[in-house]
Image (cartoon, rainbow, N blue to C red; front, side):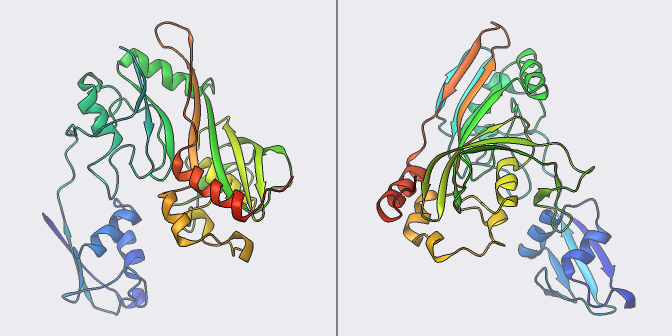
Length: 321
C-alpha cells in the first residue's frame, strides 16, 4: 500500500474532490479515483467524503493506493456457452452481466478468466490481461464474441476487424418510434469531454469514423425493435449512435438518462428486472477462418431476457405497422 498526501491550495477551494484528485493524480482514471473514494481509501481532514465533496482551503487529502494488479491473470473455472471451437478459434455466447476482461472495478469473474480455464493455450495470445480477446462486448450486452487460441489466429482475426471484414449483427430494443424502415448512421465517435466513462458523437474533424446500419424489425407504441450491423467497431457505438438520434436503448442508464421518457415509454420495474442489462444482443457473427480460409457464420437467437420484454410489449403496447 502506498500513501499519497496533498494539501488544498487557496485557489482550489470549492473544487469537487474527484476533480481535484484527477489533477493531482492524472495517472489514475476518474473511475479508478471514484472507486478509491467509495472504498474509503481517500480521507479529507481525517474523514471519509463523497466524490462531490467541495474542498476547503488547507484541507489535507490522504489517499491509500493499493499495489497495481498483477499482469498475470488467474484462470477461473466459470461455465461458458461455447458456440464454436476448434484448435484456432473459440466463439462464446456471453451472458449479460459478465465483463469481457479485467478493468477498473472488476478483476474477477470475467470472460477472459473463464476462457483461460477452458483453453489454457490462449495464455500469451494478445495482452496478458486480455488473453485471446479479439474484440469485446459491454458488460450489459449479451451474445457472440470470438477469441483466438493461437497467435496466428489472433493476428488474422484482428486484421479482419481492422479492414472491416468481420460481419457483426445486433438486435436491440430502443425507446421511441423510429420512423424510417432502415438507414445508415455515419457519425464520428470520441470520448465525451464531460465524462471519462462515456463516449459521444464528436464534432466534424474529431473522433473516429463510425458507421452503423439499422433496420426496423418491429414497432410498438413508444418502442422500436431493431437490427443493427456494424461497419466499424467503436466503443459503445450502437448505444451512442442511437441515443444521439433520440432513441436510447432500453436499460441503458449511461446514454438514456438524459432523455425524458413519455408515459408510453415507461416499463414496469418487474419487466426491466428481467432484462438484467442493456437491450442489446450480438446475434450474428461471420469471419474467415484463420487457417482454413472458409467462412464461419454463427447465430445466437434473441435471449429470453429481451424476449420477455418483447412479449410484454406485444401484449400491452400493440405493434404499429
